[in-house]
Amino acid sequence: MKAKYAINLSKGLTFFFILGLMFVYQNFTLGPWVYLALHGTYGFLWLLKDRIFPDKQWEQQVSIPQGIFIFILVNFYWIAPFILISSGTVPPLPLVAVAISLNIFGVFLHFASDAQKYYTLKYQKGLITEGFFARCRNTNYLGEIFIYSAFAMLTQHWLPFLILGAFISTLFIPNMLKKDSSLSRYSEFDDYKNRSGLLFPKLFLMPVSKQQEKTVI
Image 1 (cartoon, rainbow, N blue to C red):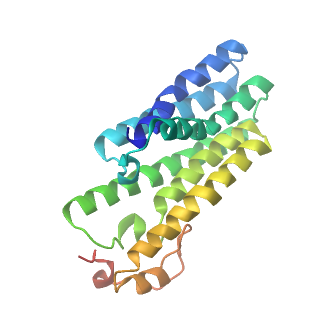
Image 2: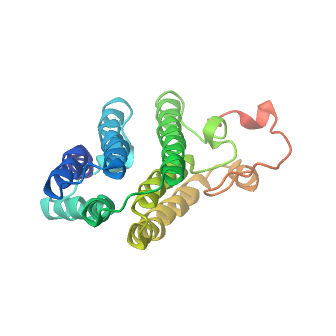
């Protein structure tokens, strides 16, 4: 099986898992509804993204036990809605507003940068140094961190932040460093690395020339 099957199953079930928690705990307050809308919708959008511009790294073949492990691992993100709904915590409205805004920013950065990467490499292989990747080499990961930070904020609990931190340190950062190592084969990479951040964009730099911004073949 492909690794993405386990991930997609988790993403597709997220909406129904959260809704089920709401019925089990009879918690239909503002927090659970907002969380359901944000995390549940993100799961469905992930499935849509996989159909339109899939991520190559999740196309790799894995064994059934490995697939089950991946499914369980991804479902650690379900701890956040469990805490929110089972505790009956009601997030204050300003926090809800901040979480929604952060989530929107995250979805935009994550999906739009993945789309740019997919369609650029589909028609022209090489180093992508423009658009979403002009100042940040991993805009998609930054967006994903924003998304799950928004979910964690709604719970007002430390555990979802700890889980996100574990994913960042054990999966996101190693993948980013692996990507840098792969891209270093391009002669232009050193210059690109100096004017872009690994995760956070380098905003206060001299404007990049049109020649520098071209994708290297």
